[in-house]
Image: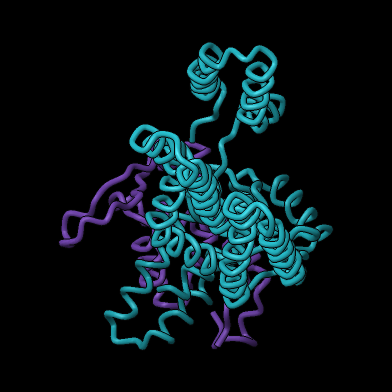
Length: 322
Length: 119
């Protein structure tokens, strides 16, 4: 049955992603499934059954005509021919994920070293600079090595690529397995960044002023920030690698909707879509600029709840529901 | 063994499907199975052809679809069932008359003496 599913999805991969085409795919799958189970019940081997079902499938050209999709079908066909996509196999996808896992760890480690590079200076004022330099150099080496190793995957950014149904479902499954783990890492990272000042304040409260505490306090602060950022960067790169693979397919074809993860929010027009894509970075910039210019941090936070309300209003009114 | 070229039969897929549906509502695979049985295994309709015909005839109002679970078999699989409408019945009768005429006309051009094995 797996083979039949893959065959059907491959046939439909370049069909326009419309409700009519989706329905046709579902109905055809139902018929093929019925035929397959009957053949198996009649004592046919799996290979024979699959062979029969596939040979009696027909072709999609006449179908698209009767679905009223002829024009879209031809458009998509023409586009697909003029924009050849490099097919990424399941093996390649697995290797990419493995590479990305290492890449994520290297980059996160580099960022960790950068965030905590002042620690040696705080510990020892005279020779600490060497420690700082060493950490920065190590970080730069990690960045360079890692991006150099990443070069072989550059084609995914520079050219159009595609994945098949089997790969998409595999990725979706993997992502679902990893998701709790990644979510915990990211949440922990954010929490650590938020509470990073607490040990510092506690030490100050309990022990008061002392030469040792004056050093331990900033060290605890920088180390916690470094750990928090490490976790956030690590989990974000991992998540990003799955998203990148899943978003390779053309969104206008059925292949762009194999798994729910591929679906993006769609808005009524392109202007809204552009605005929404820069919405949160813009809000963050406004918040920071306003805060630093006015230094009224006790007031500026109000921008977040307001922005959240505006965001949900836009999403509820201008998003296309499917 | 002779096979039927798709050009010849294309105009009569609707007739075949409507005939099956005159004896009650049915779903995709069952219809294709019945077509094979009724034609003594001489004609197997392709899945895409069948679904094309459904989409076309539903648009023209000859058939209507509804979602149902088959009662006879134990499983609870939901299937799209089709049933014939009044317009569908009229269209079927019209196609039957057309075929009788077509057959009559074509018959005159078939050399009877030379190919008997091949009716």
